[in-house]
Image 1 (cartoon, helix red, strand yellow):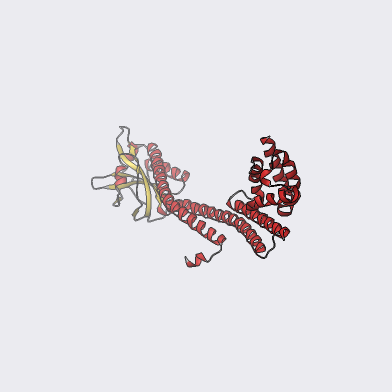
Image 2: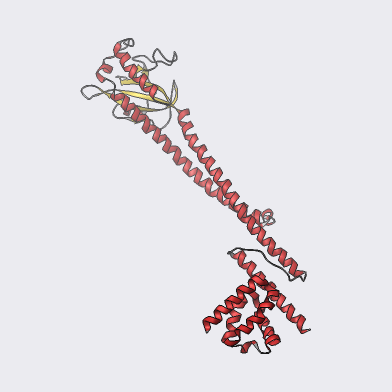
Amino acid sequence: MSSTSEKIISVSVHYLGPATKNFYDYLAKEYMKTGFDKVGPTQVKEVIKWARPLSCLFIGKEKTEKMVSEIEQTASQAN
Amino acid sequence: MAICLKCKLQSKLVLSFLLMILMISGLTFFVTYHEVKNQIKDIIRSDLMNKANIIAMSINGDLHESLNPGDEGTEGYKQIQDILSNARERTDSITYIYTMRRTSTGVEFVVDADLGKGTPGEETYIGYNYDDTTPELLLGFEHPDADREFATDNWGTFLSGYAPIKNSKGENVGLVGIDMRSDDVIKKQNFIGYTMFFMVGIAILIACLIIWLFSATIKKDIKKLNQAAEKISTGDMDVTIDVKRSDEIGELAESFSRMAASLKIMMHIQKKKK
């Protein structure tokens, strides 16, 4: 697993729970046509683009926005 | 115990805290009350001693020494009697005030503030023997002192203070005695006891109210979690858990929300796969 995908999961697990990895695997496979393990720093924006509407279905808009902003922050610190 | 196990969480919390508060405050109350009672008695003793001493210092010892049986109508007697009467008027809770002196056989009354003014039968004349002496009364001929315990005589039960009367040579020629009824002392002690009891009662009531309110919020949030769990168990994953607290129950609610989100994700993925 890439360090980027690990960071995204470590932030998201506080919102999406134990199925976070399944969520991102599904998201990457269905919408980005790639494996989530291979996601690099340049693809964070695309992950967010798809994660935002999808996670809204499960945790609501407010929590999604909080999670997304945390992912953005973590990704920018890594860069 | 079996009854308590069947109780609701809120009742258990309130009951256990109430028991704890009652035990602590009960013990504190009894220990403190006993100490305070003794302290009040000591304060009253000290007050009686001081008052007796002040009065004794204003009495002419030579004049007191010269009074003999039958001198009750003389100017000298009236002069000392006035000092005693005025002192009593200025002092609360003093029942009797008098002077005494030693004789070869014991102790006798000399001047009585009530002679000619008080209840007949309760008055004493010069030379009236007093048989119910206490160790503190005898010490009162040497230095100011007060009874350590209530003393009972023909006039009732009292706590008394004593102080020596000195003549012009500085010799102790008598004493001033002031009596406070035991009822008045007990009344003062009980007043503090009732006040403490009232304050402890109020504190217990406030503590119960706080525990009740605190446990009510816990109960309310646990109920919300329970309702959400019930909803999920029926297959309805669209649950929102409105619990905003930063303690363990808040953490439980957060975990619960994450579990619900995960279940939703898994169900969504399964549905899409089909």
